[in-house]
Length: 61
Ligand SMILES: [Zn+2]
Image (spheres, rainbow, N blue to C red):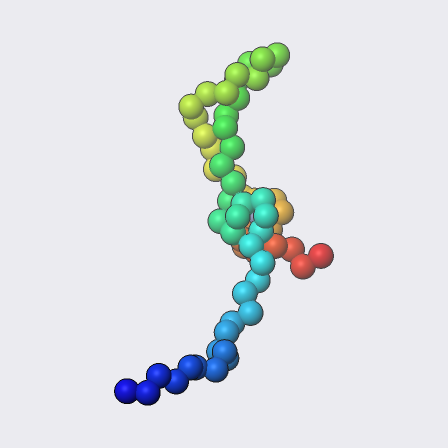
């Protein structure tokens, strides 16, 4: 069987991943308590990434 290299076509141009959420579209932040110390707890909350607005794609500009 001859091995023919496929031409490098059919590639979809992928949008860049959002650097803030790494393409997830949301970020997880640690819940902190305490005004002064800001002690981190084990609780985490998920929030929509404000950089890409949840799309996971890096903003064009
Ligand atoms: Zn993002």
